[in-house]
Structures are given as C-alpha cells and as structure tokens.
Image (cartoon, rainbow, N blue to C red; front, side, top):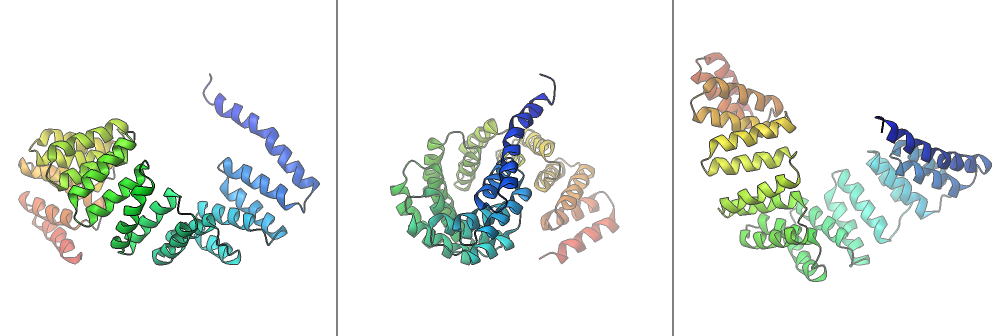
Length: 331
C-alpha cells in the first residue's frame, strides 16, 4: 500500500458519517441530541476541541440534561480545561457514581486532592463493585498522606477483586510506602501473575526486590519489563543502577546509554554515566555527563555537587566554584 493511503481511506470512510451528522444539525438546529451525537463523533476522532463547542451547544439547548453536562465536562478535562470542567459539574450536580469519579479526576487535575478524595469516597460508596474507582481513590489518598485509610480499603479490595491486577499493585505500592517490603513483594508478584504483559508492574516489582536487597531478582524483573517495552528510558536507568550495585559497570553504562537513546533529556542517566566516568578516573567525561544532567534537570542537587568536584579534578577551579555555589543554593 502506498504510504499515507491508509489514512486517506480512513478519512473517506468517516466522511459520509460526518456529513450525515452535520446535515442533521442543519436540518434541526435546536435539536440538542443531534449536536451531542456530532460532538461524540468528533471526540472519537480525537477532535476534542471541536467536540467541546458542540457539547456546549447541546447543554445550552437542554440545560437540565446531566448527560450533556457530564459529556461537556469530560471533553473539557480531555482538552486541558479542568477549571471550566469543574464549573460545568458545579452547575450540573449529580450523585451518580460516574459523575463523582469525573469530579474526582477534575479536582486531581486542579491539584486539589483532598476534595478529589471526598468525591471518590462518595463514588466508591455509590458503586462499591468498581475496581477502577477504588484504585483512583487509593492513589488520591496517597497524595494527602492517608496511607492508613488506603491500606484498609485495599484489604477489602483484594477480597472483592482478587483477579484485578491493579488492586494488588496498589496494595504493593502502599505496603512499600509503609516500609512493609515483604508484603509489597507478595502484592506485586500477584499483580504480575495476573497481568504478565504489564511492563510498569515489573518495574515496580524490581523496585521492591531492590528495596529488600534481592538484586538478582530485581535484575530479572527490570529485564522482563524491558522485554515488554524496550523503549522505556526509566526502566533502562533502573536496570543500569541495579547492575552498578552488582558491580557490573560496563553493562550498567550500556543501559544508561540506552536510556539516553530513547530520551536524551534523561537527567539521571547522564548523572549515572558521570558517576561511572568518575569511578574509572575519566574526569573530562564526568564533567560532560554531569553538565548534561544539570542542564536537563537544574534542580538535581547532587549532580551540581559532582559537577563541581569533576571540574576541580580537571583543574577548572572557576567552574568548580560556580557549580558548588549552585549546589549550596539548592534546598
């Protein structure tokens, strides 16, 4: 097939459908349902900004419709307009579980997690059999330092949703935060058994193995994650750090280089390569990598310190002093 032909065929397939929807609006300009159908079509095509206007028109035509209010708020959130989405939800109050979930998502987007937790608690109470909502509530509770409440919810959640991997993953996350590393390992092991294709789950499993000092299993978990998603720069960095702890610096360096291949602005990869360069006495290379690290992340305090030391070892006293001064300025 000629390059680009596939997209052209897709556009041709959807064009009659769009024309039909537009004609319905032209024939009945005050028909809220017609505008809503067109807005849903636009949203499905990824044209969210256009969809917002038509969802708004539908709500203007039927201002008491909670369905149109919900759809407009959801589209606004998807379009990065969380403040406007909250205004719509305030004007269209609803105790329905899905509306409360949306309210929680909007409040989280606005960095108001305490209020988001309230909405999500109400949603879980309204629909206790929704594992996704329970998961969202747990993540939100962690933002407000309510890990004890999150742990209690997850005790119930594991019994209610024994086959849902994200619930076990959340249990692992909470256990890890509470310092219960053995519990965290068991939870993440269950999660990856239930979802063997979850690359992020294997990264988390690697993290808890690392926390318990089981570096061999941590390596296996990170490698399994990269087998599922070889383009993950963070996973390459984690594997590289693991290999460095196992005193395999050459392999570690390859992983940090792979991270930079997929994301050249990965500050931690530059920083780790700088540390490896320092360890082998290549201070010029250390300067290069630490300088790249602070360029990618100017608040990476330890990289400023190492940059200052590396400059000093290359004889560049002035730049060393500047880097160490920046180090002292950072909290």
